[in-house]
Length: 164
Image (cartoon, rainbow, N blue to C red; front, side, top):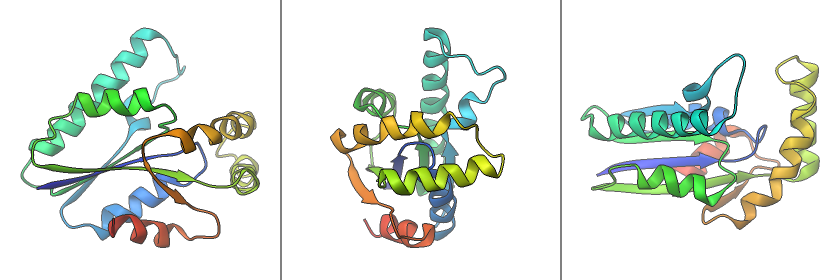
């Protein structure tokens, strides 16, 4: 039985950091960040590029599922729409897989603080703050396990996920 952890959340909520920690907590684990499947300059959003990234993600996840070296698979991405989650899941070979779909959420105040820190450190552009804040309410409507990240260290969140 393979365990698949699909971790979504808006930009700045801690998906990548938590996923990297989770990868180390779980035995025989591989990690895929959806952003790696669409890292382009210029970043272009078209129907063609959206289809491409979905195919890239499902291809890699299926490769991990079929590889005997891995028992645990962690995937994270900005998953703000149930249709995106459903499309990814429908393209995966989930026989003998235990799938946990998780949304990391936080308060608007906490999100603004985290993203402002990233902006001042030069890691993100300032427009990310409003775009992320606008997406925050969308996660509460998804068919996912919700984990509130306010006042929690990434290590604590990863432990919580590993015990699901």
